[in-house]
Length: 330
Ligand SMILES: Cc1ncc(COP(=O)(O)O)c(C=O)c1O
Image 1 (cartoon, helix red, strand yellow):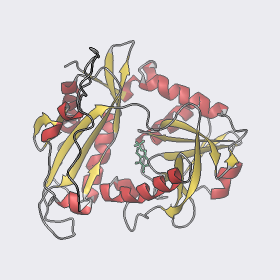
Image 2 (cartoon, rainbow, N blue to C red; image 1 turned 60 degrees about the vertical axis):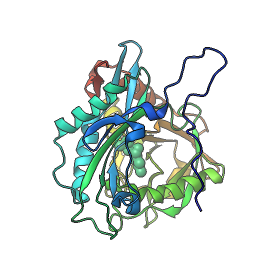
Image 3 (cartoon, helix red, strand yellow; image 1 turned 90 degrees about the vertical axis):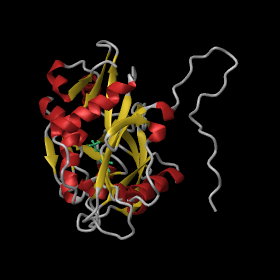
């Protein structure tokens, strides 16, 4: 039996000193079913189709605080909005707002929170009909957008240790990875927990035919003989927005790129390896299945791309300013 919920762990605890009061998560402003509301009021019924069957799609977007500009900049808003609109088609969701409308709602949700720190933004369309019955058709859907302060999801400095998961990636013909479908993330939850419970930071997942796919919530790149390699979008990966940006950065830096299927054993002989994604940003991998990657440090190509990426997202590179959407102040 379920027990009563414990009291809100995010509520500000009474403090003896006059420490600045931390905003409760419940007070954050979210967009929920057509209105801007406090997060505490954004509630769904347990009968909601998406809650019962995972029939929802989502995006994870980062916003970076620029100390120099005193502005919060959301990263790749348009690209994420385009992806969620495509995924709505996969999920038989019609009448999705236009790119401009949806981008505007995202910006407005963040603006209302007045963050002066890095933040995470999650828009999600979910099947909102209260109904029993597994299907995609003849169901209503709704939109929520939540946003909260957010730091690093995984270490980006020292490098991470990964293991090849014993769980395989769900193939496109079963549950499309490119769909960013909420229910599909249970596959990644198996992988991530297996890795962490075995003492690793992340999982590397293989496709059903045994090729390198991605990490639990990030795309994978390796370097062999000076060439940057990453699996194609037809290898059951999420078509990562960050992956595309990294390909752009590498091209601009003159690093040769090859997009092709990667064998597991290529990870063991790679000179360099890193993960990329909205959450992990650019995270070097220093060990895979107990084998050191390259010489065990962070290789020169990873180092250069990572530095460019962080400079770009912090608004320090004018040539990549178009990646950023400034959030007006509240
Ligand atoms: C399974 C999976 N792969 C890759 C990525 C990276 O995609 P993006 O760069 O669009 O965030 C994510 C999300 O962060 C993900 O959930």
